[in-house]
Amino acid sequence: MRSREITGNGIRAFRRATTADGADRSGLEALTYATMMTYAVDAAVAVALANTLFFAAASAQSKTNVALYLAITVAPFALVAPVIGPLLDRLQRGRRAALAISFAGRALLAVVMALNYDNWLLYPAALGTMVLSKSFVVLKAAVTPRVLPEKITLVTTNSRLTAFGLASGALFGGIGGAVAALVGSNGALFYTAALCVVGTALCLRIPRWVEVTAGEVPAALRSSRRGKRQPMGRPVLVTLWGNGSIRVLTGFLTLFVAFVVKAQTEQNPARQLVLIGIVGTAAGIGSFTGNAVGSRQRFRHADTLVLACITAAWASAVVAAVLPGIVTAAVVGLVAATASALAKVCLDAVIQRDLPEESRASAFGRSETVLQLAWVFGGALGVLVPHSTFWIGFAIVAAVVALAGTQTALISRGRSLVPGLGVRGAGPGPQPVR
Image (cartoon, rainbow, N blue to C red; front, side, top):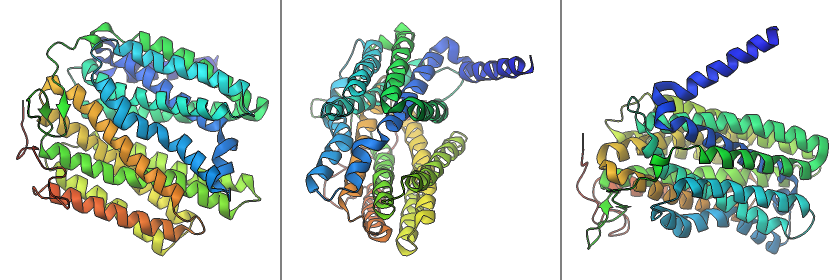
């Protein structure tokens, strides 16, 4: 009876959190559940595939195997950003259906991977799964402004979605790990397929008004000669460049640490998982912290905060280069994830402040594709740099972050390292609408 009482109280508390501020009436509750499920699916896939190509490539001497790993893990981000992102931005009808299809496709591909775990079909299926996952992220960014409750801002809304998603990923990823331990990775993939089916149903529960696009004006990074798109403006570009600078570091860290740990602890798989888990846990704590702090800020000086985040991320990478080791790598994970979350909340706030309502959905979709490209660059860097020691990789990525951070600072002053890059047509400053 006591267990039932505790469970009931927990469920009621969860319901209060997901329906707070009118989220149940605006449609945000339904989008929250769908977002939680996509985090759960991503975590389950990661657990199921942990012992396949990922670790095999990490210790492979063959450049072909490393190139194959790079194609499988990085290509989805590169494909979503320049190709699928703009295509989804032009999607005027069927956004709910597109979200549902992203889950249904992953369900089918999870079954394909489960039935072909030991042959080459696993890899194209894994590639397709990642592409659909990133497509959901872009679509979700465009749909969120359509389900915004009147009582809260986009900043708070996106922070809430991220917090619920991270918690869901931790919970369902843990369950996926238990399933994999009991019945193997094939069973974990069938478990993933079941989660995808649930996600498909949840997407169809998102209210129909997210399909209403009357009067919507697409956003653009630059001004258009035809004037059919809303330029984002310099403040948005500054925060976007800043976010991209930090995403390079988080993408790098995601892959580089795993490769170095694998190379240094080749004969001890349990130790590998523990060491990677330390860095992953630190990054998870950083994401929660950054979103919690960011949701309480007003961002009156957004460019200053973004530059501070870049500086903190760069400084942590420099420390890791000077004092290499798993502890400093975990510190980089904590600082980089916190800075990334803060900078992303800042970007959300600036888009809401400076862009008219009819262009915000498109601006969120466009900005998300740019951030995907920044992550893929960092991820590719993490695979291609030498994995013999920590310090070489962190020294290289620190230099890259410093370069991107310098470009961010220059754009805030109307200048650029490359003439015309990031400032042409951006406008002199904010264009407040309320």
